[in-house]
Length: 334
Image 1 (cartoon, helix red, strand yellow):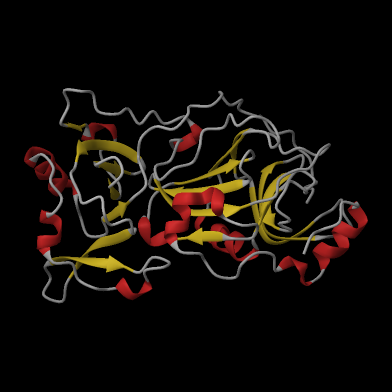
Image 2: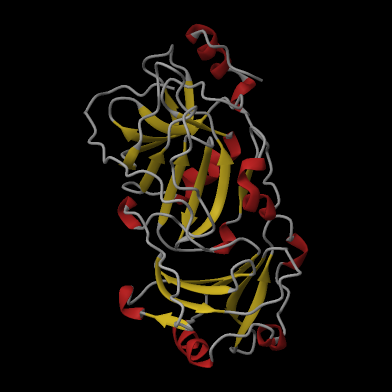
């Protein structure tokens, strides 16, 4: 259902059942590899990929997509509707200033704005709203209702939200990938590739502590290790390219007290949940022994491994972002 361009009708639509915008269930996690194929209202949510760690939300106005990263790995992607002409959503690096799951607009006839996460004091927020497939809001970022609810549950006050691009203009925003394009605080993440003579790189001092996530890319034949959202290792890693499915595993403690790898039931792979992984499976991944030895030393219960067909190489760098300073006020527009 499309919200009318006329503000009064828009508010009336928001006040009714139209709040249940978008799919009620997550799409298969593979769909996140082709995020631009998502139809209005579709979304993917796979928090099992990185159960803990810092959250960054990246909103791409060019592609009308929001991507959620935890511990440096993508755990969600959703279609959005941003500000229409005359009410454009500003770009920049923002922090979450306020959270209110039952917020109502003080400007548009008390229109409900469920799961509101305020980004500026003068009128920009993330919240559930209409998703017609193009920018239609009054400056806020509309999300599918169920997705906004899930996002609200994992974000914290002061969390980082990066908004980039301008819908309708040539694409300049850095494309979201499996690895977060931004580090904590919204600083651009370099993700420096291995040089011609490097078999692997290991820099644990870049992030001395925190949760560990490992990503293995079939496309790039690379393994990347992240700790607390920061890359601490990267290596060549040969793996069968034929299989294209995404798989997630987590290191758990078995009934006998010993560590065991268990498959995680990400969307589209629900039947894998809780299934143990044979140690021989990891022998199919060929990487420098010295690198694997280093990785083994940082793995603890809760470490996750993501095997994906997506590349981890750098995307187009895009344009620099301007950090915006909020102007205090008391209104948030839908």
